[in-house]
Image 1 (tube, protein in one colour):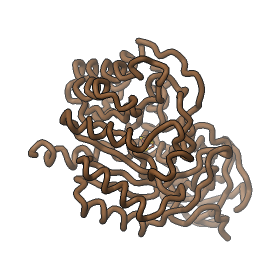
Image 2 (cartoon, rainbow over the protein chains, first blue to last red; image 1 turned 90 degrees about the vertical axis):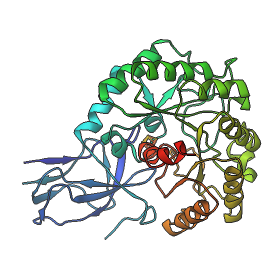
Image 3 (spheres, rainbow over the protein chains, first blue to last red; image 1 turned 90 degrees about the horizontal axis):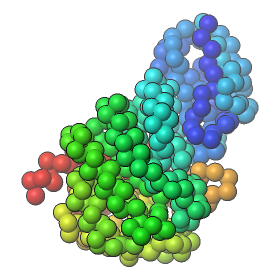
Length: 76
Length: 290
Ligand code: SF4
């Protein structure tokens, strides 16, 4: 089960705020499409999915602050 | 529901690729720093994924105090000879075709760091003549001999950013001077270099002031212009005065093309080194035929 972890988005960027999930739990996602939008101190990033599958679970809601290394979602 | 912190056009894709991580590893291995990391550039994952980066040479502490920049200020560490070898090895190891070098300002050195730029360029061109080298230099006090040294070392593109409009210099670049920067580009042009300059917008400049700067740059023959959005790199940095929308960037691009720049790149995520290789490829034939 691929885990979507918040990667290091840039030097010294330790956290981000979830600003939008492009899919809901249970939906099919294609490898490479944007999965989640993250706001950092400097700008907003779109994080693409590394694989295709069902978005099984979302672990962080919109508005929540997540840290580098935190589990964001699971794709099955 | 959407959590909005920035305008909708300020969204950057994050490329978590193998190349992105490989570039980071190689840079660490050769003890090299990039302005991409130091300035927290939002394009970093995209550029690294294409094996592009801008090396920061001559240490990571700057002797000047520009308010938009996130590079550390203070007494710089001493630069070291191995930097030349490490850069060349990393470039060869990663198969880099277009190398962009920049440095902190080194007003503490008699040659302001010009000889070190020249040494790296000469060595790179000796080892791998096909590597295109672009140097984004500080103003070197607009000393002709120092600019000549860098231009004549085998350099392909001389880049020096004008950064902002003259009125904002005291506030944004208190240790620099608008006319000194223009002179740098004029001297580089005199020695036959392809020249490039850029502005960061959103610092409180007015449209007519931007147009004046574009005219000044065009008059001295600057070939390439980049226009990008200032993004606040950290909590203690200058605040963004305005988020320039993509339509305004297009408006500036059209004006700049109209007054004769050979290539203009304008957009929220444009930085002076963004897509440097593509820009060079697009205009090199044009330049050589002149
Ligand atoms: S745009 Fe320039 S500074 Fe930013 S990541 Fe790319 S090469 Fe580095």
